[in-house]
Length: 377
Image (cartoon, rainbow, N blue to C red):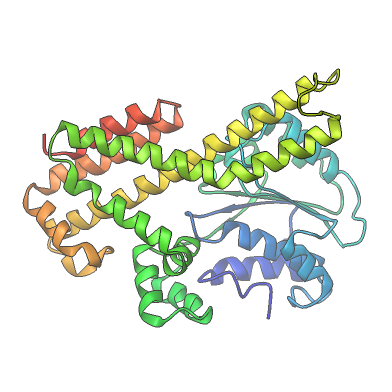
């Protein structure tokens, strides 16, 4: 099994990366930018590329270099996946220092930043210096949805690998290969529109399927102002509860570990110098929780966009190409109550909500404004 087998529906990207691994003339460079929509496999491509560079056989998928690189345990493959809203200058400086080191066991010193779009402006300036003066055996791999999400000075020094949304057939094949029944695999691939991770979750996690239904029920509840405000409150509280549930145990374990290191004993005064590290940990945990809430809210916006996309398809005579076929009756009802122009305005309102969240507008206010715009008020 090759390291490329998990990169679904990306023949052009695989070809480009294989030529670089093989050392084809001018095919290899020290900085790469992996772009593509969510679910296209940006980090999968970067990890596969890193493994292939370390592998003596160019990515066999079986040797120790391949398996440890893919698992994130290879000493010369550093993978950065932030749980915060941004990657700051100090984190980037640490990566630059690591990138300047020679490989310890492998053939390359590889740095993968999965959330390059979250690097701050000061962090980007520090990263630029590292990319401009790379080590002889250093390779940077930056992952981001679009090239414009990375500052121009960094972008111009990277070779771009563009990934595309995998086809429904490709995603269906992958899910069936994991033991998921064909009907369930096809349904998940269709409603998730090529996002492999989401499709796998819809097909295997009942809670995800329930949450999808709750979100797609929202448009039918927006009959008055009270319904809009209630739906907004549900969306925010649900996102917060899910984020809290995902981090509660981890937060407690991190605090316990730090308390042990600092010599903190419950019921006794804090040792000298302990207050600062504890406060910093709590701040980092708060940022992680905030990002998880944002991720949950983004998933709600994505589902609503898909719903109104289907409404627009019905209104323009393309009802055979619906994504949410299990909601056909509700979609057709919504379509019959307005015209395409209104649907486009509704889709714009969802997009505006996402932009407002990015500008740190209070989530509840952003959702209330959006849902009022989606209603028939």
